[in-house]
Amino acid sequence: MIKEISLLRLIKAIFAKIWLVIICAAVCGVGANIYSNATTVPTYTSEALLFVSNYDKGQSSQSQMSAASMEASEHVLYRYVVLVDKADIIYEMALEKIEELQDLCASGDPEYAQYKFLEDYKFTAGQLKSMISVGQNLETEILSVFATAKDPKVAQIVAHTVTTVLQTEIPRLLNASSNVYINPATLPRASASPVMTHTMLGVFVGIIAACAFIIIKLLFDAKLRNEDDLAEFFPDVPVLGVIPEISSVGKKN
Amino acid sequence: MFQKKRNNRSQNVLSAETPFAVREAYKSARTSLIFTNTEDGCNTIVFTSSAPGEGKTVTCINMAISLAESGKKVLVIDSDMRKPQVAPSLRIPNTSGLSELLSGVVDIEENLEECLGKTEYENLEVITAGAIPPNPAELIACKRVEKLFEVLKPNYDYILIDTPPCLVVTDALLYKDYITGYIAVIRAGATRADSTAKLLERIKQIGGRMIGFILNDRIGKTGEYKHYSRYEKSNYSND
Image (cartoon, rainbow over all chains, first blue to last red; front, side, top):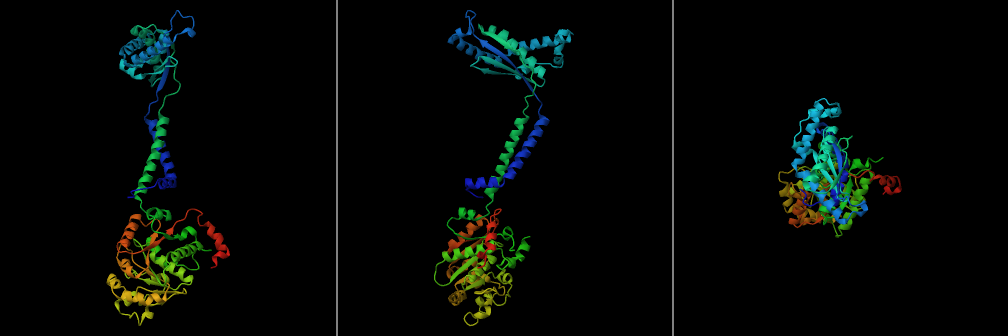
């Protein structure tokens, strides 16, 4: 086994077998794509927005919001994030609302017929919690609530329900004077599919695997291929001559 | 495939059919050898390798031919008394040769001419291996070797000795006290660096002098030898 190998030799070896790297990357990428398509269930993510403002009703315009008021809004926003993550009561209350919708739909009330898609679902508070994630933008005091589900309509209704609970219950829980405005949860059109990510990962793994194979083969390949190898391994011994292989120069005409 | 290549050894000997690039490569090696060895008198060089099949015999013969073509008086000795290849490569009979000289069957001073073979190449003579003896190494280690070189050296500018692989048998190493140095033949893509390192170590251990490498069968990159065809078509090839 060769104990030392120069970086230049390594790079040359990889470029000499670049076809192997390309083929390996393509095969792994295609394989990852096929596997991902076969095993991944598409999911949909709905987003609802909460605008958290510590705005005082006595102020006539937003320009008159004090710095202290803005800082207070940021603190409230942070507490919202923590509550969404930790407070199970939020999800228990959201579950109650969803079950109420399911009952109203089952009762045949035409006003709630649009929620018919919920009748096959039996949620738990823990399931609702696992579907929810939040994103905050401190500079804009906007809290995004994301709900992910296999059905886009389910994602939308869960996002909307949880956000509605947040809007009404958190100011009560925090005993805060925040006004919270809600932007309705969107109906997701495209699935948040990880297939492309898996495919790119497959390509990356293919490249790494091919390079690793080439490097290992090089480390264990101690054959002298040209005068550069001789000069590298045995710098003290001169190369008197390099005789070409006859087939590489052709026969004399 | 390997056996087929061995049988074509004679086809690799320099001739009018040899590609220009190959002939020029040997000439270049010849020039390097001449300028590397600036000793007065006869330069005696052993051609060896680490393993069989690396092209020692053909390289030794072709270097001898190239030196002879430059006007030097050259003698090739086939010291591979286990698998002699010089005679079949040059298409000459392997009658009395080195084994007879070293065993005393042929007297070195009186009947040396019996073992000197002429070739189709001017200035080039050959001592073939002779009959295969049961004890090649012991023959080379005997005192007659010294006597043999005493008689031969005044008559030649170069004596090139083809020997068995250095890491297989010790024959090549036994010539150390009578020669100028060693040339190791390396086959591109076949000879291993660790084997070559062992060969150099063996030569160093006995105090031998390493003249250099000759890299054999080196596969060129696409178009590398293209420019040789232009020279071949011009007068540069007619020397």
